[in-house]
Length: 307
Ligand SMILES: [Zn+2]
Image 1 (cartoon, helix red, strand yellow):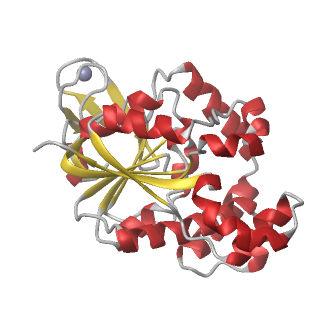
Image 2: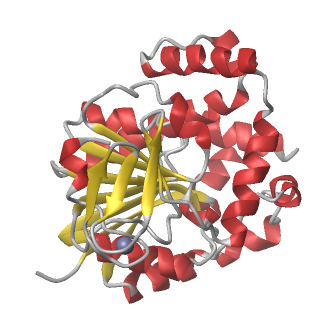
């Protein structure tokens, strides 16, 4: 546990301050203890049933082989140093997804730069995006429900603090962070309205929320199919397909001023999407004007109102 982070936390059981002790953090008021193992502090002692099911599904998917884990650690290290090869991407397909998302995050940050200060990153996974925020000069509290946090390429960075916690019960004091970030993670929430309310609670007034690369389909997208995440859902992963209007409504209700940001799509990207749906690529120039309506993975950037 990082010194700078201890004072930002509060006991999820009773709301009191936490203090450091030999094995982790302890509540100053009630008997609750939050153990630290491998530099990751766990606040997931009594997880919500949906969270428990998803964490168990992820661990089943990961398998138990120590060799595979070590191999992934090496690949994540290369990814972090921008040195990932095409073979690496074929070997571990999630890396390709992370690479695409990291490109979109960097693009988003060029138009909407981070404020200096502390970023709460929800659903931080292997902390591959945390590195982008560290490079921007921020400190990061990386939150996830899985042990993927242990493989963070910058685990020893003094600016990176890793916690296991439910995104709907972040163990943070009111107004304690400058930014709340998620990359394709907020849609795993078991209560999206609560996710926005908790984000608003922990953010300082004027702080920003970024929900990047989240599936936010418009109603016009629905006739083209909702073929998203069926396999993952069958395994116990909480994949959801929430209409764009509902994201905006829940965000505004929680006290934010939301803005949708659409990742740039060039003609070749559009053509490849059409190919994957067995549609003629000649449609690409025709599709471009309608992209915003049909794009599913987009960004929501929101500012917390108030002073
Ligand atoms: Zn307590």
